[in-house]
Image 1 (spheres, rainbow over the protein chains, first blue to last red):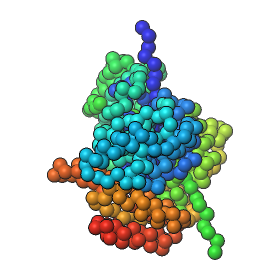
Image 2 (cartoon, each protein chain N blue to C red):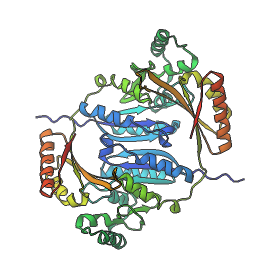
Image 3 (tube, rainbow over the protein chains, first blue to last red):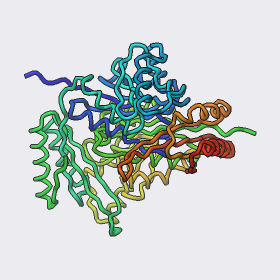
Image 4 (cartoon, rainbow over the protein chains, first blue to last red):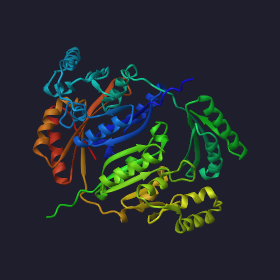
Length: 258
Length: 258
């Protein structure tokens, strides 16, 4: 049986506002969760400022290293929206207002009685040769050039654009994951058991993620999540079951999560 | 008057669990907000998987490009905790259990009646020549090597380790920011006004961040945040005031935020 290929992606979040810590990014997580069942595994994410050369370098590096790249942010109507120009430059393409994008915007605004101003026309700037990505939420299209998908930064708009992605990509093996959560477990207590299981199952990836926070009563709430990942669902479930039974043997009450 | 220098930082988040979208990262934001008042400006963040060569390449690239680098994650007791070894390799240093780190762990566990197992001893693996970063929350130290600070991934532990950072860094100019929030404003409506202000104030960075979500009544709640950033607080406030007055002139009710 032929194994399905490994298909990878990177996410490039563009925007000073995320980097400063004032705005919280949710797009990386949304994209990873959207792509996983399609058989595309997000393997890197970068957050960069609205700086032309930084965006160009990141697009080129990620485009060369991964099957697909998804950018978010910087394609709006204002002076600091420089993503489209930077992506064009990364691919050595020219960029200008394109008739197809202008027509989409003109119809969108006409139907909503919104004036089609010069600022809005800026959103019709699309690199030469790129294909438009539909924006059912706010009209202004994203675009695809090579293996790079350029999406909006506003989460609701970005999610709408993702609907136009599945037909454009070819997924590979789906990565299945199963989490076994053990309250009260310090991760070191299960480290050697987990290491032994990992050594016996080189096809799986086993991770250990401790958590610790203040509980509602002021007492620390802590534990460890053991996560099994792999491309064969039965193997993933079998390993998760083994972990759970070993935890039960040690007196913990494991809980399965997706 | 001598201008204070521009001091930059990058954050490197290490962990499959963040990349997969199952776990939400809060460390990037915590670090950015911690460093900002110290005059250190986070200019890039990367999220990479628990893959040795990927970590090495990212540490080397970021260490060369920014004044400081902060890594989080992958320094625990389990087989998938490979950050310390990868950072040592990135700097061409050897790594092994160090007596100073072992002594800290031994005392921590002795005082808490926790057995000092082989798995826990793994957390005393520290690169040759690195200085230890105190961990007041869970004992096992982080470390500094060159301009790279290696911190834990658990947010509560990471925050504790940050307390040991200020004495190790020299900050530069503080970046001040002021947000002017206008409900109901579509960003294109203020794009040319903002562009004109930006062109007149090259010392400032002006950003425009639209938001859109469903409000509690089901009606869309939308607007735009205009953000002014700069190293001279009076200039920042003056520009924010100008933006607010122009918004008021257009019939909006601007709100100032930090």
